[in-house]
Amino acid sequence: MTLVRAARAEILDSDPTSVITLLLDPEHTGGALTSNRTLLKNGTAGAPPHLHAHSGELFFVIAGALEMLVGDEVHVLHSGDTLFVPPNTPHAFAPAPGQDADFLVVITPGKPRFDYYRLLDDVHRGEATWQQVGETQDRYDNHYVDSPLWSSRADDGGGPST
Image (cartoon, rainbow, N blue to C red; front, side, top):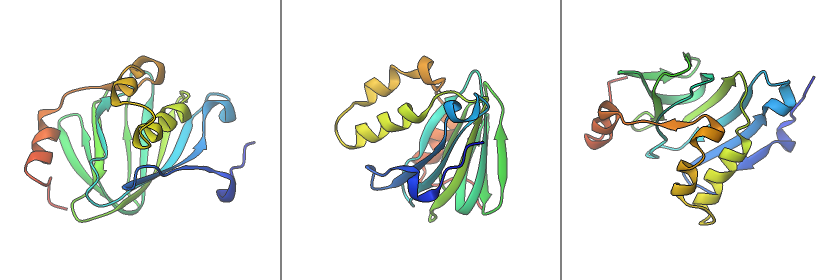
């Protein structure tokens, strides 16, 4: 059993538009899963299109609304909604226009990811570069992909209606 008390969870908040709370990594779960809670504030770019070759990813929206690319479709998830993205499926996410998004992420099977999130935090503190993040794609099973649909969504200032 592994219990993570809220007061002892590691919080990454160097990016003023997001907060990532690290919950469980494979070392805590016998490799079963990785989990974090993420708060993305209104207007942040969120996560660019990517896929995980070896893991699926579950999203549960705690509060607000989360806009998600899954394959060739864009969905808006609201408080209480759950979505599972299978391995090898391109996806991206950001808060829905005019909203914050507070959500739980569970990646299974687990892949060590805490250091990936810490690296992102380092970028926002000016202690690492986006190039260094790109160089970790195989290590963290986080492979960036192009999505004209997601790019056009960002260009026109919004996505689908909620």
